[in-house]
Image (cartoon, rainbow, N blue to C red; front, side, top):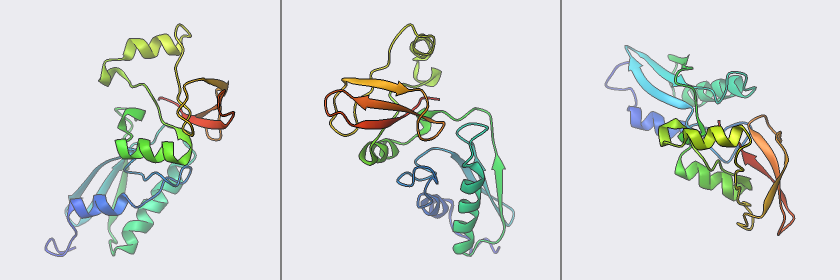
Length: 174
């Protein structure tokens, strides 16, 4: 593609911000933080993606949706590259994405990883030495309980609010 005619990287980021996650359609692939980089290499647009986890069943659909969105904008030379390191973390979900999850009825992740300096807190939680307080996305109460470690998708757990009695998913920290 003629460099004078190709879209800017910012424009491509804007386009990809319109591509919904297939499992949670209110959040985009950019809000989710899985689009790591966008760059022009000669006449090919290269989009670097880190899946939420290596076995995520939505990865293929996400790739197809990104390719289709870019083809719709007239880009015929696109290459998707998979980057596994560093591994994706829920810390990469944007603030807007967290609000979108909450508004949709999914409690966003509440703790981070070593990048935020809370690695020991996470280790304590995963080992059972501490409990995680999850706020209900509907009423805001922290009087909630985990029903199951496994929710509607592998990246979510099932919770219930004791106060409003509503069940909800919690987007697990990865």
